[in-house]
Image (cartoon, rainbow, N blue to C red; front, side):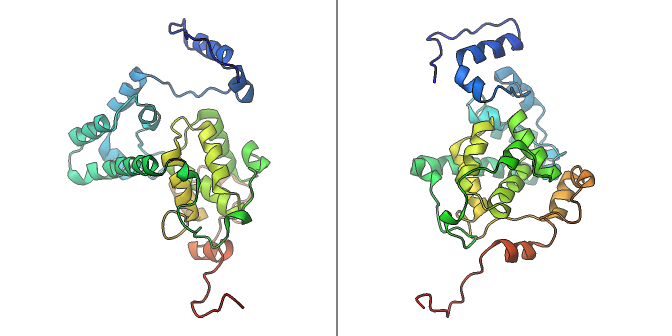
Length: 277
């Protein structure tokens, strides 16, 4: 990879000038993917996003893709905003303790993952426990399927999520879980492959929150893997994808959680079964 100049330029005519300069300084990265997110970086953009923070709306609507989320994670990821700074803003603006709790819980998970990462380092790339799916790691494919990477699976929701990941570098938390579950459960791809894919594109991607959440989806960190239903996705996207999907009513996500568990996971052996036979 070509090394950038020792002293990087800091003043630019406009954003386009900045982008052109960075492509010149990092040609290998630009050759790999030259798409630029519409999300602005820097302290000024972070403060503007923080000023829009509404803990009440967040608590009531955060699970919906159209809901109020902070979108502060990229700034937290690179230290443009501090965790304590965000915590104090939440406590100041929340009218009730129960309202503040929703967002503070999410910050608590972020802090937990960072502390876990500090303990195990590159261990975040290794299973923290047996996979909750019943399958062995070697039974999962190592390569990212081309149709997922290109957004050509035919599933309107998954194709849109893949495109957004790569074009914008940001996904709603629910979207991340759905896309991760589709990759590891329905397509049986290694979670590490998905984790690397996310890290290559997410502006807020870090090995702590990213990898340990992927492990939660596959059931290596927690007591059971995560699956979703079409009804679940349709509810929290308010039908934005299902309404225009040609596979509606016959997509792989149709059915109950129990249906998916029976179809996608290997049943636990009977405690009385002799595995040596």
